[in-house]
Image (tube, rainbow, N blue to C red; front, side, top):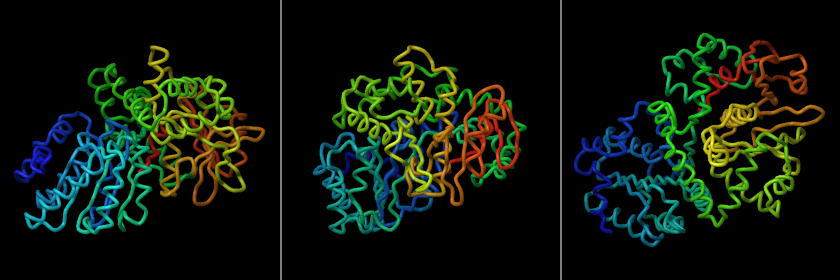
Length: 464
């Protein structure tokens, strides 16, 4: 394809005002609920930098890129200095190399020095990193900011890691993940969340102060939380849910195809995926070895289970929680682990696939939502750590559902989604200096151990 063939994807080349005619911008503006990720405010668009944006399909990566482009043009960038290309029709890394060089030649002919290239869904191109490496090593991208996106998160994660030292001073791997409950609430009811103080740090004092600001909205937040357990954190599903009062079947099918498509692209078997997911539904929140998981799933090798679990975790379908080694404050990979679903919508999607009904609200589902939320919150203090390097469970005579790494001490969370909280329910917290019980409705704000309804607790736990 000639560079002129890409003019239709770059409508702003006709003039700055034409950015508003871009179909992704139009679609975004037509939505009732428009989520703005913090990424545009964080990403550094400096010459010589390479950044990646990873995330599930339909999470809004292309729209995010178009909003960044709109901001660039609004701030004065030459419209022809901004090049966007979807990589769906590019066959291989050779064709990718030719495309980028064609654009660089086009920019030079227009006397453009500082350039911004956005390559969308680059993970669909085999060996794409070879082309990028060659362009960087040759110095051809010295005056160019390069942004890469991908839905095949395994590919783009590994590809980015193969470019050490070539991503520039400001190059970074960004994750566009499903909305947390606090983000969901701020999207749907910003009038409520504007009055809620987010938790600043993992301490019972900070949690109590934040929860006090949320208490006046207890009833509204409870309703929102129940809706979140169905719609999850995917903007497309959220908008469909509120428009139709139900998530249409085609949405579930769309996301199912994403999971199956990505896992089979990596040479995995759809049958094994089905066995893994079905067992994960039954065993969610249960401490289990890969051997036991394999037997339950009727998979011959625990190594196969481990490989599939890692792939599904990299795709943010699963979240694996490891038992903590208290001396090292690190995961003990030899002990039993717990498998959760990363987002309640994904759990509901697979539940419908296997059991032909919507997922029920169970303690295991609530626990999975709490685990992921607290892991994402704890990671803010350790941005270069993985999620399961900051969140664990602990078991001695008693089991503690969630143990979180903080800058000072470990912080414990016990999920008790039940009507009454008794003295015995605190026993799993006493090994730790501070902790909180996530309840169904009971509340007791105290130090060093508190009880907070789950919908209030997660409303004040923000991941950004």
